[in-house]
Image 1 (cartoon, rainbow, N blue to C red):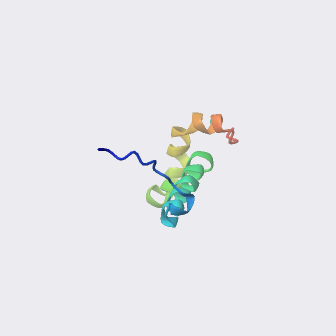
Image 2 (tube, rainbow, N blue to C red):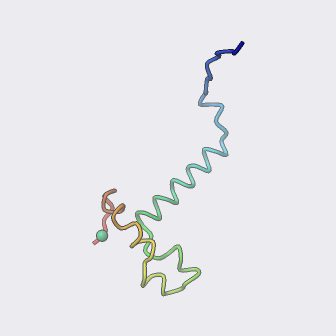
Image 3 (cartoon, protein in one colour):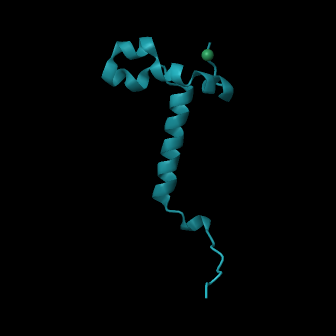
Length: 71
Ligand SMILES: [Zn+2]
């Protein structure tokens, strides 16, 4: 016989490390979509990253849809 217990998720049961990890991913995503002008790849590519703005071009439409100023 199966037990039909209802699963209860309490907010306080969520590990703090998971909340911190998701917050970090959220903030990094906001930076990449909204503010990156080549900064992220500049440590690898140097000045070329600021010229090509690869991530900026990749997320350009999403950037406009989200309302970030662009051009
Ligand atoms: Zn634009």
